[in-house]
Length: 97
Image (cartoon, rainbow, N blue to C red; front, side, top):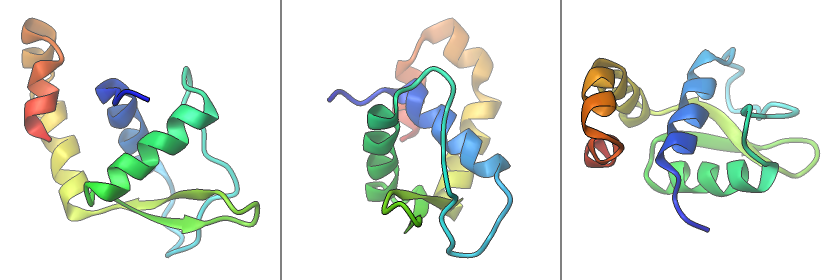
């Protein structure tokens, strides 16, 4: 599966909006417009890059529990460079990673 930078960004934005429950993974996790398989793959990429922490929910699915410092910084940079992304395309977001 190919890495989808917009999917990664939407996942981490969704995580930042979640209520913090320690290391307890949520019962479910969805991002509008993306399949469960694609979300799960990109969650692993975010975990590999140390952008998020994960836990295993009751159904055995590994889901995000919170963003890391690096994940928060990524969001801050992407939100502050939205104008550049629109003007210059997705390469700007990839450069931030």
